[in-house]
Amino acid sequence: METTKRPGWDTLGLMVLLVLGIIALAAIPLSGASDSLVFVTITGFSQLVFATLALGFAVRTARLKTLTPRVRRAWLLMLPSYALWPVTIVLYGIFPGQEFPSPPDVLRLLIPPATLIGILSFARIPAAPAERAKLRLDAGLVGVGSAMVLWYLMVSPALADSSVGWRELVPSVIHPLTGAALLFGIGVVLMRGPQAAASRRPLLAIVAATLLILTGDAVRAYTLNSGGPVIPTVLQSSLWTGGVFVLMLAPYVQAWYARRPEASRSGTDLRATPRPPRWPYLTVLPGYALLLITVGIRDPFPAGGLIVGALIVSTLAFARQMVSAQESRRLAVTDGLTGLANRVQLYEALPRALARAGRNGTRVGVLIIDMNGFKQVNDTLGHQAGDQLLIGFGELLRRCVLGSDLVARLGGDEFTVVLPDISDEVQAQAVIRRIRAAMAEPIDVGPTMVQPNASIGMAISAPGELAMDELLHRADLAMYETKNSRNAVRP
Image (tube, rainbow, N blue to C red):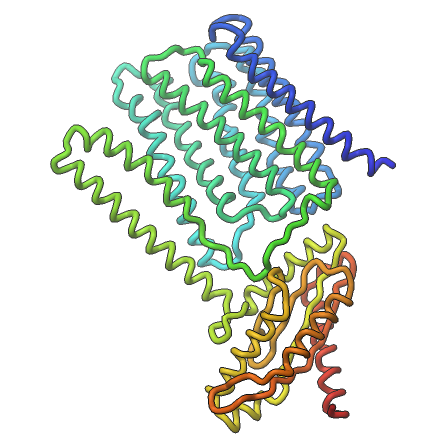
């Protein structure tokens, strides 16, 4: 009974948290001037309550046995960031208005690197060195583009003001650096996604909270550098409070989804080749815009035209790089002859299908298909005819499966089909019957028509099975049994 009631209570708790957050954020602009006691009390109390609840939820989530070990480890690495928030808020109440380096200011500087470590622990990092290098370059582009904006808003005004002392200058420099590093980590996460699908929404909540807090930091620094009030404004306090509130929701949502296996179901197309993200290259646009505003407008001839030309050239270079990256990715996971998936894509897609089947209580079917008589076609009609036979047979297999299934060429005349999220072997047998029926039609190989024939082996994953190699091995053995029986008694 507990497992059936628990999700209902979790949903009710989430609704209560959302209502509390809306009330707190609505109360901030209604509580009077930013220097009033009511405003300071409501803002500080709301942030402390949210930060304390966030720490409690994070500790609970890190201990959930229903999460995978890698996800639990990621939440353990997030705990220092969550623990620093309530301590820092309390210290700001004990040491109000003190200059840098006050105890809360120092602790506040530790939050970004702690958050960066936690965020990166969620990300799915590619195994190939070249892919890791491209990921670092793309994420570095995000960090540099964001740093240009932070330089304009936070660092440059502080350096230009000769009256600014080291107590104001040091945090004005350190905060943008740590902010740019955090944005680098956010870029990695958004481009690669989380290790586990169940962590996608909680991780997006952490990213959103971090962006709200960084925006609040940037607004406050710009306000101070422009001669504004030292006391945080309504906008700054709302951004910070909203950030801490969303940070609190992330571990709660993770636990909420952990008890809902149906929430992790998805109809992901195993054949899809992920496109390289385009948005990282857009992060340089704010930097160019600021450069055009500060330099180009004052000196349009020749500086303005040169800046616009540099922007156009950079845009074309980025577009060219995106086309190359997408083509490289396609070639890396696609068989060059048939256009089917290759072993690389198979070994990426099959573990994901097994993991999703384990969460959803379904199974994965694997067919190993070996063509019969292919060597004779090569020997008698030539390799070009053999290639045409392989291409035609690959198209035959594509026509016999659903859009979410994966058809791959293992090499030579051997193919495989992955059938995700099936209930039993009856569905796999139906695919085999479609393939055998399709082989009744000959394939045009150029000089003549060839009747395709193949031996098919089938294996169905056991409930919760995650061993990809074992599943492929069983399908391979079943294929050889079919081939041997065909050779013993020919139809």
